[in-house]
Amino acid sequence: MCGIVGLFLKDPALEPELGKHLSVMLETMTARGPDSAGFAIYGAGAPDKVKITLRGPEGFDGEAFKKALSKDLGSKIDVVARGTHFIVTVPNVEQEAAIAAVKRVAPELAVSSIGSHMELYKEVGLPADVSERFGLPGLAGSHGIGHTRMATESTVTVAGAHPFSTGKDQCLVHNGSLSNHNAVRRQLIREGMTFASENDSEVAAGYLSWRLAKGDNLGHALEASLQDLDGFFTFVVGTEAGFGVLRDPIGCKHAVMAETDRYVAFGTEYRALSALPDIEKARIFEPEPATVYFWDRAA
Image 1 (cartoon, helix red, strand yellow):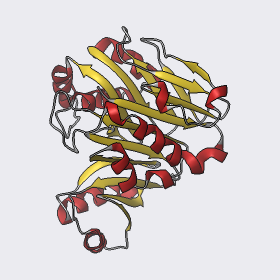
Image 2 (cartoon, one colour):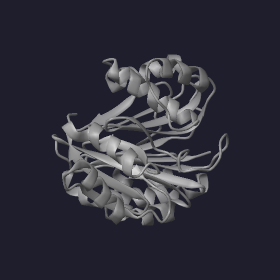
Image 3 (tube, helix red, strand yellow):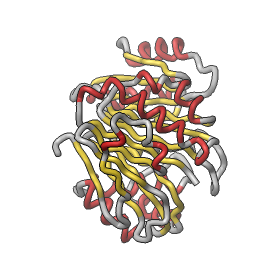
């Protein structure tokens, strides 16, 4: 049992408040996932630069890391520290060199995500503590998704927390369980994909990234997952342009959505949406099973 939230802002005037609203939504789902939490925020970025979100152990020396990384690459590097996570911003052409340099100077750091607009944070602990640690209430952006986890099939670790990112500006949160994830994992590894955990949700994220890399749009990738992924699930998927929602054909897991002319919101339960602006005027609906829903900036 886990909790999922998502918020897509149609009205740019709400963007400074994205983190504030998402943090309330996330904390409201604490009872569904008290052991770890995480979120992805899509905000400002530059088309010629990439943000590499790294996560490290408690007590990691961020200032020493910044100096060592700049020295290794031979240039001053933009590094922003938030809790145990670090956002390294470099020109697109230097992405691979920067990741290689991180492995040399700080092999204890793990890559959480890569993207022009996405930053991804996750940690073990109560959702309120995770939100505060990373300053979620003060973050701005166009859309974001979050997850509160109650581990049922694997240990409580940061690596097992959601969201999972397996492609540029792509991430996924999941409530449910996949029965064929080991077989799909082996197939995707043969296709060249790599995984950082044994979590079935990372396999779902990897599957969608694989389909997108083959030329599918997100809608087609999600539709294909209905045939190739067995189990019960609700997926919320973030991309640079927006976010998508999909439930399994039976619709086992709770899901509710709200839409106004200013935003679209997703919650595992309605109470996650109850504090949003003008929620009493929203169209409230339950997403249908085996039906792809997607909202993006071009829509």
